[in-house]
Length: 254
Image 1 (cartoon, rainbow, N blue to C red):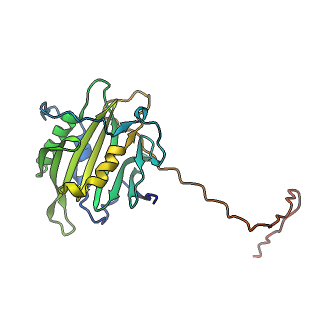
Image 2: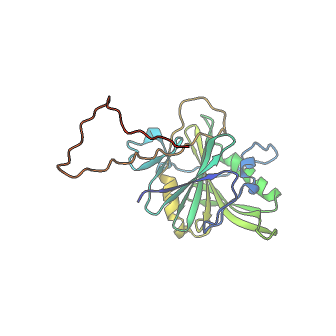
Image 3: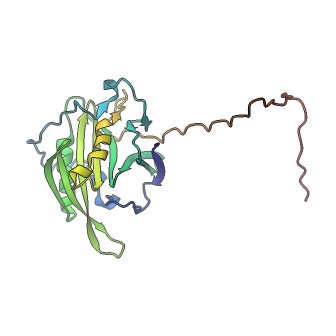
């Protein structure tokens, strides 16, 4: 089954999707900005990328993938793929995969050639959530050190609630992948298998251009297949094409 695409502006309010979704108010884009006062966790475990996610140089074929530019997403039955679009900047800023009661938001950033940045970013995200009155606990996970967070959000009736989210990061060759899990994938490991498999199967296309560390890599809308021409019944003959013959005219009567 082909993925379902839904276009959503970045400034739209969160939709009812059946899972807990992190909203812009949680400030995670701000969490990617350098914060010198937040200490880096030097004790984190290095993630073994030998089973993915992959750099494009590490794969032989990308058949069956959805091409979003900087990241190729594997197609899965029942999967829904939503793209976040910053209309002011006219660019796609993130992709969210929904599958089997879970969801994961994907973003890819440029990174230094010689070192990873997830340890530093993880500390910054945790500090940002804590400042806003939420909690962020560092735990081991399928992608190395992760954060299990409760993010303060404003509910429909004006009260402050909390939404759970799980932050994972993968350092690749000159790129960094951030995956934010929602829904069942946050606290139920057996229910997270589907979206975790999608993340592990991702292919990142970094490109050769020089970019500043933490600069967002460009995503794009997938190309839509051209509609197939209807087949003509066998034995049907077309009228000969006469390009210089005057065709029917439409006269406007006022």
